[in-house]
Amino acid sequence: MRLTALRPRLSPIWRNPDFSRYWLAEAISGLGDSLTHFALPIVAAVTLQVTPGQMGLIRALGNVPNVAIGLLAGVWVDRVSRRLLLIALNAVAAILVISVPIAFVLDVLTVGHLYVLALAFGIAWPFWYSAWAAFLPSVVERDQLVEANSKLMLVFSSTGITGPGVGGILIALMRAPFLLLIDAVSYVIAVAFLAGIRAREGRADDAEEAASVLRRIVEGLRVTFIDPMQRAITIPRAILDLIDAVSLTVIVLYILREVGLSPQLMGLAFALSSVGFVAGSLGAPRVERRLDIGRMIVLGLFMVAISPYTMVIANDGLPDAVNVLFFAIPGFIGGTGGVIQYIGLTALRQSITPERLLGRVWSSASVLGAVMAVIGALLGGFLGETLGLRPAIAIAAVAYAVPFLYSL
Image (tube, rainbow, N blue to C red; front, top):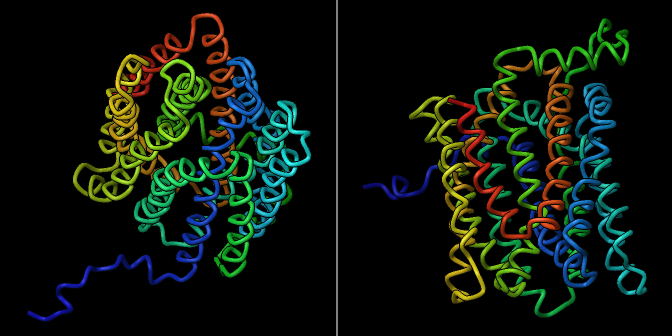
């Protein structure tokens, strides 16, 4: 037997140097992001002692700008270089996140600062999300979109393990605000990799350039919500955005205050739960080949629906190890399914949407998602304040079945 037969076969997509640079940019900035996503709720809950209502407002403010400017962002993304826009947004993000540790050192960090930070990232988000989703078809061929999205989701999934895991260790050594310094550095490194990409970005034709902004927005909305296939992609994702916002608003407060886990054990639970995201990222191409992309999406939504119930029964009377497991199980099962359905939905939308419309279609769907996320964040804060943290989590757990039932 030849030794070469024993070597693992690398996907042909890695022969594309532009995709490799794009993947590295996402991998490095994704690790920094995961530390920020772990640390910021702890800053809010522990350092600033926010209420559930304030946590809901922070999350809502992160989505409000998308509602206001998301459609305009899609038009902009379809007219400019998406690569240069991503570079600019990473640079701006580095400046924003470094403001938190600076304010903490100067002893001027307040809940208001987090409101402003959420609002600033909310303004950047519709440009970044539309550019990120629309840029990939310029980097890889369309028949490689499932594979490429799978590789990118593997990045986010892996950082979902390393971020909370490393964050849990680091937070024992330093105050939570200082973890954001790592994220700022990761954005700068991502800029360097993005600058080296030479993607084939098309230009709008003369008729497109002459069209009014309103006409372009309407065209994006028409494709997103009137076309049956696009609508079937859009609605389940929007419902998940609503439920995710309810859950994410109260989950950290629930874990720390109701269940009584430490930030370190919470980080361990989140890291273990993210193994499911890795499994989904690795398995999505194989699932798509076996089932086809439509049944792949339905399978993913079913796994999300059955996953969240153990976190409802976690409580401070159980051993910490059991509670950690109860929070890891929903992430493992639901994370696997969530990534499978997300890769399927994303690849399907990228493959059926004309490139000149990609930015507008993504922004149109994103605006709906933002509206749902604002409602969900405020609803999560309201439920947490009025009914309590555990009932809010229970309501979210049951609601995760709705997207699956809609897709049948």
